Image (cartoon, rainbow, N blue to C red; front, side, top):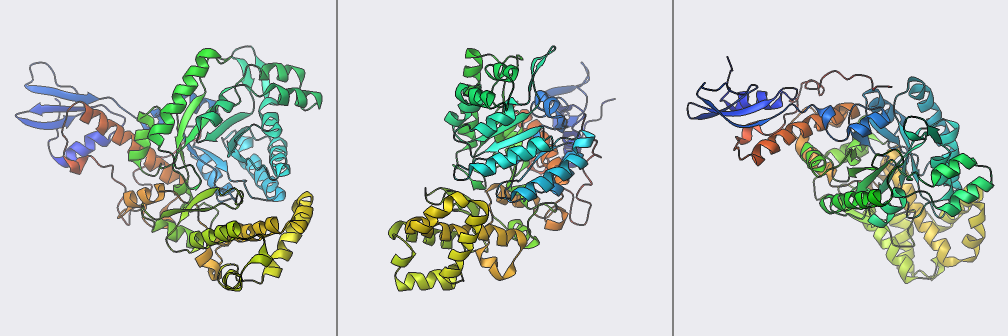
Length: 535
């Protein structure tokens, strides 16, 4: 006999049993829920039904197979090692893909981190990626990161901030191409490109530029066969549509950007079919901080989702406890834009946390000074005093000496311009503050806490609103794998609710919100035991 639950608690129990069907029925003039469709003549009428929707069925099955993960879920890279070895390892062991935040780190730290990941995860065939950020001012850093990835047999690269394809990015992709008797072309080096503009996406949807491939072949960095395969293989396996995110962002609405990239992908696929008969997958990032947002991204056609800001607040993130406490207090409106350290002169901005820090205002003042003056010697006395006493909190001469030492050690080819061009020297001194502000935050230097630069998008506020009053409200309970599992289970739950609503069913509000464990309960209490990812 079919048991029909009419009470809100019963409705929620049926809805939240994601591995079983949910049927909304009318019985005795009352709506209810059951796992079985009513039998003919039973006096119970079926109003709407949804099938099972386990979290591992969300998104693209091809993404899961290709990367060897349980879910179509990725934790994107956060620069400066905030997406730490510990974060990547925890998510990989739970069957999720995560990208190590190599951007801004010196070569020895990248090499050490990738060595640990190779030993801990690579030997067990668990998935992980490394970020490669485009740095047009320092191409040697890009080369060093690619060299480290090849040296430590990193099989997946997350490319970000690229506006053009570079020789080292192409070298990584093409040097992994092989002929495969079953699939046609095997991409031993997987590439996930993070973009916010269709023109950039098109670079990755098409094969590598012929002139770059020819030069790599001439230098002996790729084989003739790899060069031939590069003519037919798209640069990327996956392209992430990056919407309103923390850090570098164009703040594009995901509802506009994602469909545009999917249409572009489909058009190019018709013109130039993939040699393996598959499609480049399009994922979604930016604003993914709640199950509702994640469900919406999958409903719009995202093959996978990428989280960012919410991972910075997890226990495994490579940033300070003070930063995590500030992030846990963030509201939807607590983000603002500020000048970026890496492209300061061009006026490029990053999205940062406004609550609890004066960084955004100080950085904006620096950019205005840069626009208005020809060099440090041109600064009026009041501006010079403000700069040394309230922003840099150090004599200008000392900061100039630090910049000189940095260039001598890391970028000696840029030192002559620094010494002869006062405008450029002023820019690098101001960039010193922007770069140090992020380091003060990650290291937790309390004496500079008002200057902390914390990259953050509105997803953080949405996550805090969702977890308020639950076991996940406290920063010390936000384990990365637990956060991922609850977001995915919540997304599956809300996807089923949406399907029922589209069928015209009106459900009580008390049973249509995914419930997190209450305070005092284990944060993972509603999450099934995780399994290792398939090899």
